[in-house]
Image 1 (spheres, rainbow, N blue to C red):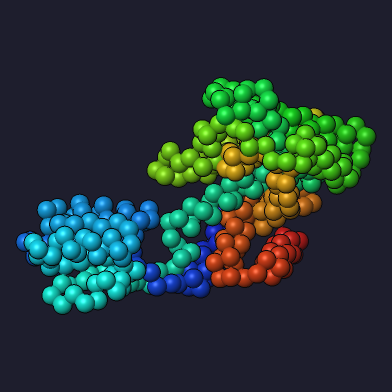
Image 2 (image 1 turned 30 degrees about the vertical axis):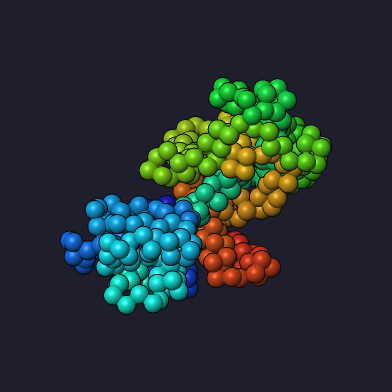
Length: 417
């Protein structure tokens, strides 16, 4: 009962933020979709002679195609270009007659149409709509948060086990560099096949998983503080990423490599977002339905009591850090796919965002408490705040202040509980 109550409270907070930024980002816009084309054509006579005039940009061309489909034989001329192109078209259709010109908000105001007395000029009606709620912006939020949310899964596992991992941002960069270097130097760069791309990705992910395993082993065997060990691994990972790439970006990868990061095969939802949701579903199942998940909570809640109860504390801890490293490596592959390159600059501050997502989602920094659905909601809360501030033109320094205060408030609320 408490689980669902907590998740509903976080969802309510997310909804409040969405409503707030929806109100703050209302803008007047002139839709150029199939519905707008249908509305413009619906009032025209069946024998009307219509010319369509749009600019030579993708959005306008799509609008022109929608108008042509609605007009049928009534479309006597379709102009795609500039005012001079419209003038030539007018000269062609004047002899046969012209009743209506349909354009966009921009083309309807062209001066070439201003002296036409017997021709009706139509354009889409304006409407007020929140920029925040546009489909493109919502998908943009999901795409931007996908990598951080993937890192946050591993971070949540480690924090629940009573640790912390500051190296995930650097491991992300290392994975991206190693993956793209293998593609370039071992598999022919742009000529690499799908199987070779998968093998290269597994190479980057495997290296990061090994790094996480090493960090966990040092923490458990030498009893060193996780903060210090993962801080050292962060520096090592970042240095290796820059050194392997010679301080350059590695971009010699196949065009199809962007499938994971930029593709959208399922109802136009980005593949990276689909992967993120599948990983959260699997992680939630692991934490709630497996012995390993129960052991993580036990180790984070009270390691000594867990050991007395027969829980393999050291092995569970090492596995938690290895899993965190593996997910950081996967995040690096996704980012390399999104940006079609690998660079040591990737992942800057991502460890902080991953920790923030976990904390805002209710994960206790003391260990033993946290959920995957909470972390996912926390990641979206952070993404919505950042996206909303970008849309309302809040400058970057102020954004950092706001994000810091949000994290502080989340930790304060968790401590109060």
